[in-house]
Image (cartoon, rainbow, N blue to C red):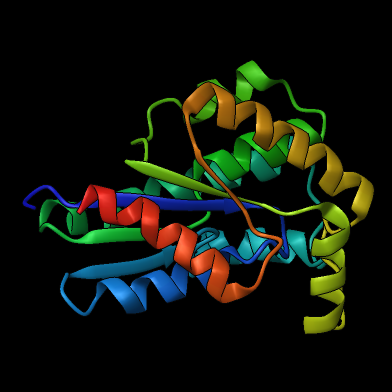
Amino acid sequence: MKKGLFIAFEGLDGAGSTTQAYMLEQYLKQKNKVLLTKEPTQNIVGGLIRAVLVGDLNLSAQTLQLLFAADRANHLEKEILPALNKGFIVISDRYMFSSLAYGASAGLDREWLFKLNEKFRMPDITIFLDVKPETCIKRISESRFNFELFEQEEKLRKVREEYISLAEKFGFKVINGEGSIKATHKKILEIIKKYL
């Protein structure tokens, strides 16, 4: 596999994408070169985004999406594309479809969001972990003390609607993530093995 494989995980906050991305990395790295990465990244722009998400910085929804696009451009240039060119399997915990789903749910124009992200490389596989908003809120409240910008049931309901629409348009692999961590991991492996 010379050109690498680009896998992106998407889902609502609390859907389990971070856990599942890590588990997939652990499984794949037994026989492959794997890069596990995420958005927002750990760089300066990613830090600004996280400050908005936790409420330390107040920016408009449009400005936030411009930051996401800048972070993504740098992420691709510095991490994702070099790794793919070396034949790595790249797993990203969130990618451009997060911007499209969360941005549109915040009332931003879908066409503008598509234009902002259209030049970015598409993932080879996008896995959408479909979990009900109420389940996500329950999981978040059990794992940490604070809620971030989008972490309210009504907001997540809108985000989920956007994701479902994107899944139909772009052919995501949709996985019901309501079950146990192990059961969800098993479903993901069934999909990934077809590509290896």
